[in-house]
Amino acid sequence: MTDTGGFQDDDFWTEFYDFLFSEQRWTQAEDLLGTSPLLSIPAGARVLDLCCGPGVFTIPLALRGADVTGVDRSPVLLERGRKRAADTGAAPRFVEADVLDYRPDGPYDVVLNMFTSFGYFEDPADNARVLETMHDALAPGGSLVLDLAGKELLARRVEPPKVVRRGEDLLVQTDTVLDDWARLRSDWVLVRGERVTRASLVWFVYSAVELRAMLREAGFGEIEVYGGFDGRPYDQDAERLVLRAVRTA
Image 1 (cartoon, rainbow, N blue to C red):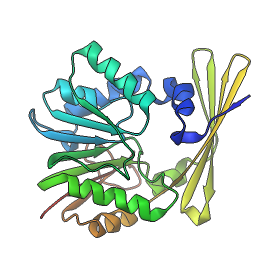
Image 2: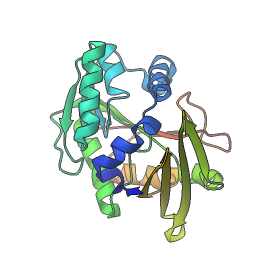
Image 3: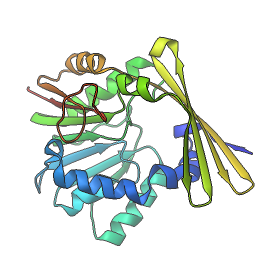
Image 4: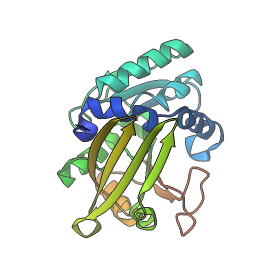
C-alpha cells in the first residue's frame, strides 16, 4: 500500500498521470482549440496557461502559433511537458512556480486555467488572490477563461463512486461533501496488480454566482458564464462551468 500527499506531491502526479492526462485528454484539448468559440485564440496572441500541468493546452496552442507560457509547481509535470513539446516541435515556455508566488511578465492577451485547476488552497483568501494574479497578468481588453466543475454540476455527480479502468489498472474515486458544500474531498484508490496507491484531494467548490462575485472583486469587468466550451447556457444541461472574464481597465 502506498499513500501520496495529493496534488502538492509529485508522487501523486507520477502515480496517477495516465488517468489524469490520457491521450484522450490531449485529443480533447486539440479539438476544443479548433472548435470552441471561447478558445478562439489567434496566432501571435500572448497566452498564460496557469496550472498548465504537462501542457495539455500549452503545447497545441504553441503549435497553432500562439506565444505561450505555461506555469506549474510540479517539476515532474513540467518535464513531461518539455519532452512532449520537443517531440512535437512546439516551443512554449514552461515556468516552475507556485501560482501564489508567481509574478507574470505580461501583459497577456489571454489567461487560461483549465480542467478544474482552481480552488485547491486551504485558505479561501489565497484562491481569491489567484484570481487577482490572473487579472493583473492581462492587458486591458484581455480575457480569462476559467474552466471547472461547478458546485451545481458536482451536486449531480457526487454519488456513486466512479470506477475507471485503463488496461489492467483500476481507479476508484469517492467524493465526500465537506463544510456545507464549501469544499469537496476526493479519495482515490489505484490498483496496479498487487500494488495499491491511495491519495486524497480537498478543494473549495464554487457556484457560478459565487465565482462571478469573486471575479468582480478581483477587478474583472465583463463576465460571461457558460455551461460548456460550445457556449451553451449554464443550466440543467450544462457539462462544465466555464467563465470568460475581461479586464476592462
